[in-house]
Image 1 (tube, rainbow, N blue to C red):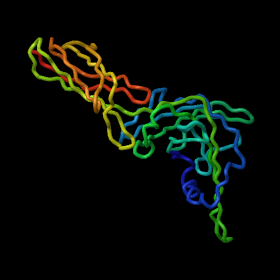
Image 2 (image 1 turned 30 degrees about the vertical axis):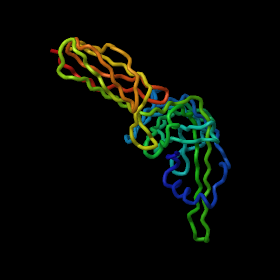
Image 3 (image 1 turned 60 degrees about the vertical axis):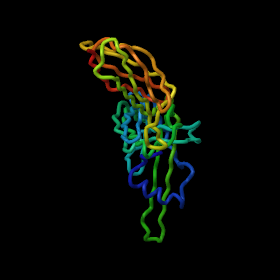
Image 4 (image 1 turned 180 degrees about the horizontal axis):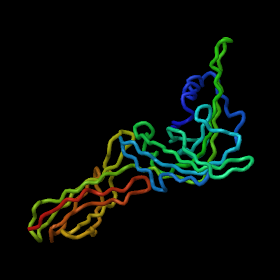
Length: 278
C-alpha cells in the first residue's frame, strides 16, 4: 500500500478524491530513477508483528527548475507486486521524503543521490502468502493543487500521480523460526540421543507462525571447546513442521538445527542445546 505522498496536503486531497481527481497529471515532469538498491541487496524478511525498516538508495534526475518540497509535490521509490504497473496487487512505499544530495548539474537537469526508508508493518501491509516472493521497483511523482479559499463559495483540489517502472527487483520473505531439544540430559556415552525441534514461518493471513512441512533442516553438533558446528545429518520436517531424529551420544557438546530458507521463506537457526555426556 502507498504510504508516502506529499504530507498533510495529500491527506486532505485524498479525502476529497471522490469529488475530482484527474486520471493523470496534466504536466508530468521528466524524471529518472536508476541504480536502485533495496535493503543493501538482501532479502526483506518479515515476521508477524515487528516493523522492518528497509533502506533504499538510488540516483534521481529531475529538471533543474523542479523543486521537490514534500508539501505540494513529492517523489521517491516504492515496491509493488503484480504483473505490471497498471495491475498491482500490493505496494510498499516510504513514510517520509527521501534525503537527497546533489551530485551533478547541467543547464537543464539536476542529478541527486537519494536514500529513503520503507517501513514494512506486516499487520498493515502484508496480507497473504502471495506477498512473499519477487517485488518490482517503481519511481513515483505526486503533486497537488489545493484551493481552500471558500470566500468565493468554491473550493477545489487537483491531484496528479505518475509512476515509472525501474529495472531491478526485491525479495520479500516470510520469517522462519526453529527450535531444538536434545534428550535425555545428561546422557550416557554411546547411548541414543533424540533431537526434536520445530520449523515454523510467518503466516501473514493469521498474524501467527505456522508449521512448515516437507523442508530439509540440518542437525549440527559442536563439541565442547570447538569453535564450529559440523553437520550430523539432514532431517525433513513433518506434520506442523516437526523435526525428530536420533544420534549416538559421543561427547559433551551443543546440538542445533539450521534451515537454509527458500525463495519465499527466510533462513533460521535454533538456539543450541548443550548436552552433558557421562
